[in-house]
Amino acid sequence: MSRGFAAAILAVLGMFATTAVGQGAARADEIVLGADEWCPYNCAAESDRPGYAVEIAREIFAKAGHRVEYRTMPWSRALQECRRGRLTGVIGADHTETPDFVFPALAVAVTDTTFVVRKDNPWRYTGPDSLSQLLLGGILGYSYDGAVGNYVHTNARDGARVDLVGGDTALEMNLRKLVAGRIGATMDAKPVLAYKIKEMGLAGEVAYAGSVDPTENFIAFSPALSKARDYAAIWDKGLAEMRESGRLAQILDRYGVSDWR
Image (cartoon, rainbow, N blue to C red; front, side, top):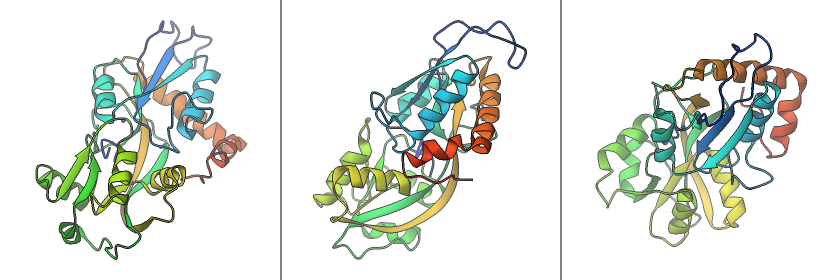
């Protein structure tokens, strides 16, 4: 699943470092990461658990002498702001969705497209043709992958087949519509669905209905910023060190998530 799905972090608000990355001490940059809420990857900005991607980024960039600010906003807006250089980067982008962004080598997650229905609905995803059997709920600005993405794109204006909603709490809206019987199914990455379903207390009311299209997702940086490649290099070095030291596993444990590698 893409997040523009995906359309994905950071707007440079502070002073730029005068020394190149890796060439000694630098004055701190203020790095802004933007995305819509996508727990457990990135959650509410004011929470003591803002999401494992946010916690990882803060530690990595703090070690390099920089400060990370995390903001939530609709995904389509985050992509626009990042592309213009008003955000330094976005959390959860993929290469297909934002090919012009600057990507590190190491992903922050591997996600899929998982469908969920009401527990009394026997429907299961068996391929793109099965989608025409119900009204499918999705999220505006997300770039769904593969055959599912083609179906959503083709039928985005057909209100009898696809119902897209926007905003910071779009998944919550879709799950409420699902339980109320206003849509037949909705979809997102399985860890995101599991987190939100548990948070909303809907485990007894919904059921998973199939998964497809695993995709690597990244913290991707603005193509408008000259230091974007430096930030990507800092991320790769820091994440590799956290994985080696065991610190990555400690953060992931707080969210009940395993290493995606």
